[in-house]
Image: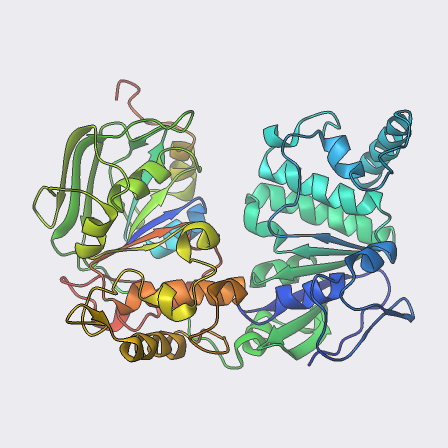
Length: 433
Length: 53
């Protein structure tokens, strides 16, 4: 059930935990999903349900978290794509270009109209998405987690641009789960929890603690950092190099000790060898030079199966491509790496009840919101899919957890910190926070 | 846990030891608090790595 009103040119923030229903709500508003019940009224008239064309015509523009641009086309072509008949003469392009240039000057979003999308940075692509919406005369602009892909500097520029657009009469709905951004730019905030409105207020009248309380329904204790007690090295690399993949460098003479009982952070701009390191540790590639030991021994046949057997669990960067198999149900996903282990395997046969019980435990422990273990994984919202992956990883009691860009994938920091295993982490175990 | 991230603040907040990776080269591990955000940021841009490596 959802009831809310959006009035005038304001900057609104829909705000909530993972899996609270933010993205779902916006998809209903834009017509990607049809509402099961209820109605939407826009500028005083009802909006047909489940019809993105109608939403577009009424002035709703949406910038998805995952951009919807054609990488091989130019900026201008992407912006006008779908607005003109394919029979229209080429001269329309000049007029379109004039309109786009005027828009850019107007709202301060500058991108070279002839540049190819594939050559742009993520921040520039986001500008193109916003321009695309404004070109279609959007009066309400929906941005789904727009800062997730930006550096802090780029986010600052985006906020300034949105402020200016709002002063010119645009309404902006900003979906986010980052608390500190709310107080920075929004006028009014709506907090969602479990698909319901948990609260709604002027930002000026709120402090951050109150918003946080509305988000989770209780005060959140701040995570406490305990001193690490590093144990033995679980994985060591000595002078390890891996092959380059096209323009993406492999590792070059890397020395690394991954010790049990401590968190090791790897900072770096994407594309500097992180994928090579993650692939190496998960058994996807092998060193071409140097020495790798797992629990003190050089692995014989280094494969993904060997990595799983060695207790290396992964939270992959792309939850859709490598984190889950969308067409398999939750049980099948949960047992992918352990269907040959007891109690799920009994004398070579799959014990379906044990598999379902295992999945139910994950669902309950990690609060995965779903109809049940038989749900296909692709029907889970992003946040719940992440909770499933995290549950599968931590419930197997792994010796090493490889977390690749977990925050960009929007795992709640609290989940990473407050895992059930964190409490008994010592020199032998792993440690979260 | 090995935490790979572009967000330097997250890495610093969650890690006991931080390494920086740049063009396939890995820095030594720095214990919590040994390097400032600015120092680590400069290393992310490739400063301080031995180019012979």
